[in-house]
Image (cartoon, rainbow, N blue to C red; front, side, top):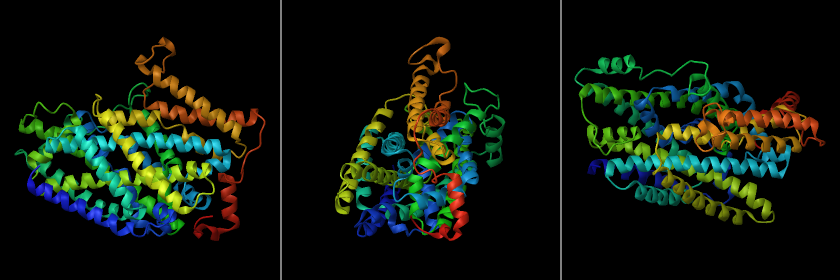
Length: 515
């Protein structure tokens, strides 16, 4: 990297750390550290959600995916808005009234402690994987720009991010995210502008070349489930975002930090609406990169062997000093903000769902200390995942979708069972979880005969479908065994029917914060 770029990046990171230091002085209790005392305005919470969703997976993997193929992997993102339209006005106030800190408190109320611990653990495993991808792609980018070994960059960024996260709570994360949102759009517009106007053929020719060669298509509309067709990606995206809104601590925590129910709904809506244009812009960058190198005839260096490396190469070779640093700062800021948020929410469930169960008499100071320890441990574990990914073949976005589909844990199905089925019991939920794990394990090891070839008994569909099947299996078996096995439902009023009845009887409850 050039000196001016490094100075811009260093200045931006110093600004973010300064925000963290300022708010670190206010982190005296677990309510401060995990919920910011429910004081965040909706617009800031929405920008924070945007920064949490837009990670280095977006910065690098989306352009890499579009460069190598088309925009088909953009389709799951559309479901982010669809699911919000379908259920946001119910789910958001419901969680704000039912849980205190952890999203998985709800599963405990409906199905007991064991199911609560399972759901927390399933979330933690999935987010360790996600954090590993973020560390990996950040390191891949910085390695391309600086020439440093990727492994060394992973270790260094992990240390810096863990230290930053330990300094500030969720309040520092949110306000850093607000700054990040503006820098993000500046970097996007600069990159698109240079890709359009650097080729001597002009912007129109660049766009036409990408369009005419299918680089902006959404993929096959064939009714097939063994390929990443539109229908497969819609199904994957639907269940992924049902889980995101209902069983993802990083999103549910955003509901809880807002000042009011109305503010939370506005904030989540703002974040969801902003995400789709950002994802689209990064896909556009990938398509324009393909046209740029095709029209200019410029050769890529032999050191580039993954499509995920091409955008970072373009930044350091064609964007003027300072402006490339701005985009790199946005990348670093987005990655560290998301990692800080995830470490914070993993700390919430570690303290509330596990430590508090083992040490119910522990005081708030002890829980805050354990929370900080979990932050460090989760960061180190994610760095280990990143080191493994650095030595794995394949495109990052496709691999990310595959892993998140498999480790979903059926949590969307578990929420639908708890929220929609009044008769659902603990025994039914456990039976559904077991069935989901068995089917997911079978599908994972037999899909395509890659790990275990069972012939006609192999999982016949694309691996993106594994998570969706797991959710459906959990829900269906959960309903069936709730009726077949003896047992009474716990807290049957904590369902959609009960929630609607309560709100109809007491409309003023919509503005109550907490329980």
